[in-house]
Every structure is written in C-alpha cells, then in structure tokens.
Image 1 (cartoon, one colour):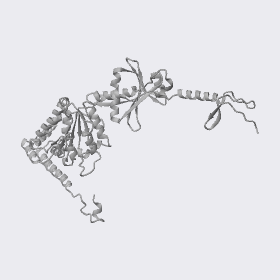
Image 2: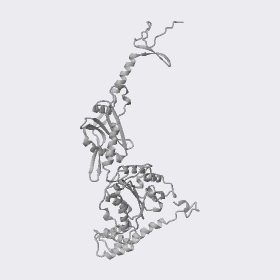
Image 3: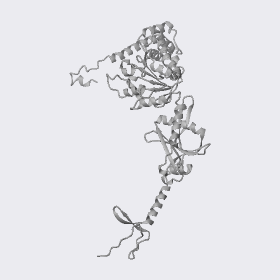
Image 4: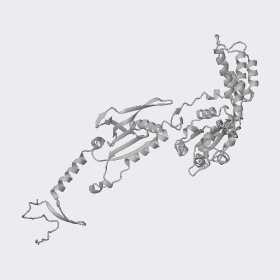
Length: 485
C-alpha cells in the first residue's frame, strides 16, 4: 500500500515524478479537493474581457457617441399615437439639441434612415424620422444622447434613449452595475408631457386611431336646425365650455354628458361635427367599429383628460357600450360607467353621445348626473326644416321653369314624417332622373316621381322591420322551417 501525503491547500503542487506547472493549486470544495491551473483561469478572464469589448454594432455606436458605458430607456405607443410622438419630438430637438448625425444600422453598416410623413390640419405634411438612430448633442451642456426610432413586430411605435452612465460614487466602480439613472425615462416623460400639453392633437379633431378630421366651419350652414335643439346645445355644451374656468375656480364639476336621441337620418352626427367646429376644444370621435378591445374606452378618457378641455363624440352609443342590461350583458357598459363617473374625475371633458334607440340606453348611464346629465331629443324635421333642406339642395342645379316655390312647398308638405336624409334623397334621385335625359334639366315631374319613389322605399324599410322575428314555419322542420333565418 502506497504512502499518502497531505497537500497544503492553496499551495502549488510539487511532485518530482510528474511535470506539474507551478500555477496549479489545490482547492477544497463541497465536492472534495481538486486542482486548478491559475494560468488557465487568467487566460479565460482575458478571453471574456475580449468578448465583452466586441459589442454589437448599436452598442459600439452609442459608446463612441456618449463616451463610454451607457444606460437605455425605452417606451412604445400604438401606431397612430407613436408616429405623432416621433413627429413632435422633431420640434423638441430643434430647440435644445443639435443633430450630429442620423442613420440606420443594417448588418452593422450605416445606411439611410426611414422617414415618414403625417398631414396635420392647418400645418400640411410633416416629416419625421420613423426608423433609425439620431445622435444628439445638447447645445448648452454638451451632453450626448442617442435616440433610437423603431417599430415593434406587432406594429407599435418605439422610441428609446441611450445616455452616458454616470456613477453615483466615482470610487465605487465595483458596484456600477447596480446604479440607477432616470435621465432616459425623465426625457421620455417630458416628451409625453409636452406632447399632450401643446402637441399636434391639442385643439384638433381626430378619431381614436388618431386619424385627423377637418373641423368644418361651414357645417352650420348645412344643418336645417330645429331651433329648440340648437338652443339646448348652446346652453349645455358651448356655454358650459366657456364657463369651465369659473366653474373650476368655484370647485364645481367641469365634466358633462349629453345624449342626442332621435330617429336615423336626423343629423345627430352632423350636430356633433358642428360642436367640434364651434368650440376650440380638442375633439375625439368614437364609433362602435373603433372599439376593438376592453380598455379602449378607458384609454380614450385618459387621453381626453390629458388634452382637456376635450369633447368626446360617441356615435350610436347603444351599439358602442350603452346597451340595457335588462336585454343583454354588454362587456363595455361597465367601462363606460367607470370612465364617466369613477375614481378619476373627468375635469374639462364633455361627452356627447348619439343614439337611434333612446329606450335601449341603460338607466345607469342615461339617468344619473355625472354621467349623462341631459337627453336632447332631435326630432324629425318639421315643415320649415324640410323646405329649407329642399331649397338648399336644388340651389345650383339646372332647373326647368316648372320647379317653382309652390312645387317645392308641395313636396315639403307631402314629405311629412321623412328624416332629413330622406328629404335629401328626394333631390338626389330627381337629379339622377334629370341626368338620364339629354337636356339634364331638373323638372317638377322629376321631383314628383322621386318623392313617390322615396316614400315607397322608406315604407319598405319599416315593413322589413315589422316582419316576424319568430319562425312562422317552425313546425315544418323538414321544409320551410329549415330555411328560416
């Protein structure tokens, strides 16, 4: 049996029979004793340091620009909003920052960046950096940052800020990985704040996808007004908007909800556009097809509060989220209730909703101050309104002498019960009849034929609505009953 010798821990191994490098030492661990070649350890460390220095192309660009290690902050927004924020950032940089260079990285090489353009009402097309890097230098402090404009795989717009890492203690290099520097996030917060305070959305009209809608100052001339409706809107929306600063100073509520209720075609949506044009308020259009997911309504009100004073126009609220819970459970109803009168006050926000079915609006929305304070009925046009619509629509159309004031008055009287949209259709179809002839001149006969046609078509719509909803042949399972619905 051979002789065993104790080997000192942490000391080089000396064995005359084996060629053991002097850099090999013995280490004791939980799994026993083993030898480690310290020279190989140093070689491994050098290899790691070398690999760490061979950084990705983006990191190399940033470190060259900011002068060393950096921190990185990023934020993303939906497609429409993100593009507008990128565009607005151009204005911010023109003030305090100078652009040293901008480019895109493709396979490590610098290539031309991708630019986009957005048409802003009153400003025209505005160019912005869509995808690429922008190297910036502060004009006063000389501070250097890199902005990265990119698009996520799901289409979200992303803006990131890279800036120099500034140690909290110059001597504490060992713990530099634990340092916190909020400059990048503060920069993005400031950008968002400025955007909602004075950016391109402020005072403009747009939908929830951030598509701009022109504010039409002539829309007042296109509406055959019911004077009572106009008076109520003036008092409850326009005058209320003007009084907001004083109401706020008195500690009173500065939010309001109005429902415009009436038959289809009475101009409720046109009235919403008129309100957007009459006031200087930021205006947001919401329709049922735009509400795709839970949370959309909450985000609408969050944006509205940031952009206040704001007018939210909700088209057909009975299909958007205001259904009666006695009929069915609508997933968005609770969201509307919470947003309109929840924990967060909608200071400076007026909601105007339209509906063709006032009876379908849940009482929790329509019968409580703080949500919808008033329901304004928009009735079918009276005789005076119908005459006004007819006169306005025939103006500028080549007419036969047979089209007299008395003829238009007769058409207006016989069109009692028609909505404004159907009255317009009388002129529309009469013009089609006129254009089918060589002279293309509108005659009284064209108007008479068109009126009869419209009355028959309008009646057809109501006959369809009155058809039975229950299968009249339900007992005939093998015949007509199988074809129902």
